[in-house]
Image: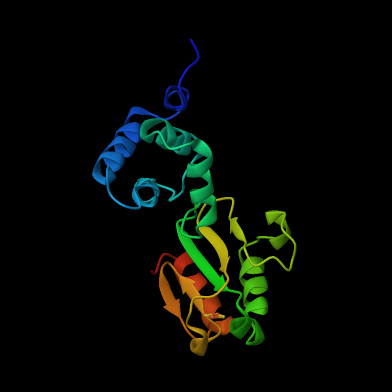
Length: 183
Ligand code: FES
């Protein structure tokens, strides 16, 4: 007899992970927008703040939502990560206002300082979306299309804390403080 999607996924998710997902599903059952709430909860509970393919398959199997719909939601919303995230997440805005005020230089500089190459993402230079994580998992550098705070451009978010009118020096100082564990 063929295995259900949730049975296949459960072979690679450990019991603790399955329990967390089961609890999250139960907490959202019957609620409007349940899928997004489940994805958000499962990601928040993950140590590396991401949704693995196994967890998406398990969610699909347990909720009865088609796997393609679960994956589409997880890949559509910028809020969700499909790759493990670093301990520190730095998000550089690449919207027009921030671009004209130097966000490209900020992005290049922070990548350089952390030994990351933008080309590693496999996306073209013009593509706005980027997510790179250092080999030691300490930093993830991401981009966003706009934070909606254009008057404060250029804007960079460091561990969910918005920094305004950022320049190379202030960003370097932030990264250094995080590297040295002062934040
Ligand atoms: S363009 Fe950067 S906040 Fe809008």
